[in-house]
Image (cartoon, rainbow, N blue to C red):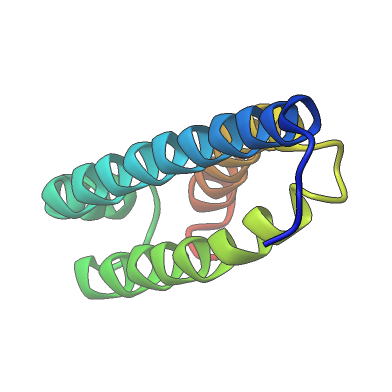
Length: 115
């Protein structure tokens, strides 16, 4: 219970509050994305199966494993945001990584028929 400088604590408190709001918004965005992926899983499976020589079962297993990897990597992205110049880099890197992953998946399914 020592004396604290309100000006120093205020700036740090505002920064932490801003970071907390950003983390909550990223978590909400990710939850909505995962919910959407789950809702459209059968559509994605049929699309992947129709684009290559994958069976429906193989396409479903592939997409489910990709979703698992994406969810498992989310905590690593959160932890790396501290070393990658904060949340701004994370806000840019996450959608870019998602777009690259989708492009790679589509190219591999279309050209090879399997992944």
